[in-house]
Amino acid sequence: MSETSGSAWAQGAESRGQISLPERQVSPWWALSRRLLLALLILVGTAALVYFDRKGYVDNSDPTNTISPIDAIYYTTVTLSTTGYGDIAPASDQARLVNAFVITPARIAFLVLLIGTTLEVLANQGRQMFRISRWRKSMGHHVVVVGYGTKGRSAVETLVNNGQDRESIVIVDPGQAALSDAHADGLAVVTGDATRREVLRRAGVAEADQVIITTNRDDSNVLAILTVRQLNPDVYIVSSAREHENAPLMKQSGANSVITSSDAVGRLLGVSSLSPTLGSVMEDLLTYGEGLEVAERDLLVTEVGKQPQQLPDQVIAVVRDEKVYRYFDPVVTQLARGDRLVVVRPAKELPWAPRPGTHDEELSTDEE
Image (cartoon, rainbow, N blue to C red; front, side, top):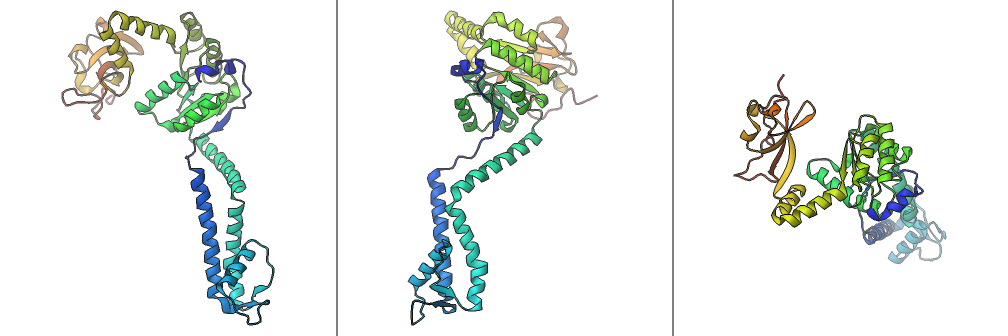
């Protein structure tokens, strides 16, 4: 949710949980030009067909009964527009068959182009309903991001950069600005208030693997956490908190992890003030794609039995039996099968800086 729309969220803006999927952007001038070109092609093609078969037509207003190119164009326009004055008419069997099986479909196509705007709106609505239905069937094990402001966009960017498919990310936000921004980024959006059960149901929270809550109000975050946890007791919830004292309340409400944004920014500001070099390193770790990154990976078979300090990666923590140990903890002096490593590594592999675990190596969890 955008930071400027906190009041709209708090007031429970009118929302019905409307789902909208991103559309391909097409220039309206291109769409109009294409319609005009198709209409012109139908006119020219039909006029040429009439003139080619001119001997099969009679002109009641011309004593010589001669069909000229102008007569063919005139007949085509009054026929395709369904005006039909009747002064020129097909007389031979061949001309009548051509009118029945060629010019009549052309007339229908021409009329469709004339009322194309209305039909296109209806078609778009039908297509959108079909896409939403198909999207619902394929949705599952996805990520729901509540709020698409600065924090929400950064979270989505991090997920995408780490391999998450954009089609498996759903945004929930009541703001039109967030709707436009998310669609521009190719994301599905449920427009509505995330404290409402129906809105979260439409976002598929019950089948989601993770929910990230990034609204700009702690009270809204707590309500959203409670509602999400009620719909899906097993989902992993990450929430932001503006104030540090609200973090325990969010965890008590059901959040698995709470990031205190003001404290995090304050600490980074303080570190940068005391040590600009350390501040730049911390910023590097938090920025994806360049320099260093913090990542979690499986232990490789070749690394079983080694000490964390002996690995090419800079190991900072070891996850064992769902518990996190610092690399110097005596419990993880020797790495064991099933361990997961939290490492600092190059964001991009370099010849002198390998990235173990990214080359389809055999993992310690692959063997019984």
